[in-house]
Image: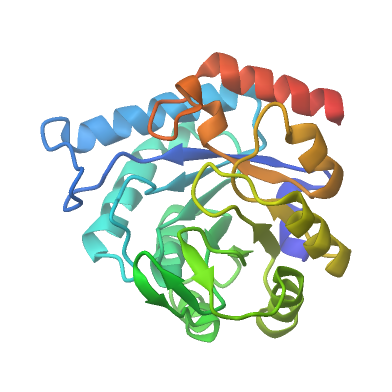
Length: 267
């Protein structure tokens, strides 16, 4: 787990999402705004989050609905172009997440210099996208081939939009993933984007993995962050920092600042 510490030190990091607008080829893509519109949206959110004092950001294609398990190369290329345009403006460590494709996420990390990726690397799920059965071994070997071998891999072990066909407890699945697939951090999620993980799941996973970084991956809010940080080793946050707390809105600088003020008080 040394990669996690090398990125974040001893603090419990707040990793804030920079959500892309829908990419070219996705049903919700705004062709009139075009690529420059994507860049402008990401730039505004990036600067608002950095001004609030977040510890890291993560770029993700959250609005590419319906989601894919094998992402079109054009989507990954567009994300790389946009991040490249913003690269000199990024002042904190950053990660990437191409939903829901571990290989695409690792390729994007290699192209942009991202320090970490978040993905579903293990498990078997019945999901909105159909049967979901990622291959961690193939993803790791692919990452090494494309130059992303040193990128930290954050394993989401309770996939959103899905039901695990593995009937072991979430804590047992997390413990097994750490043994078999060497993640750099373990993430615990709610059922969909913006919904909180159950505190009992977060507590049971951390109890099973006392020496591994365990983060809350979804649904952390201003009023719950103190309880979450008491258990977890950090959090990933998106929706709660947006205007009106709505996932598809832009980042609200005041909400982001208020959230980080609360985190600093906890620390």
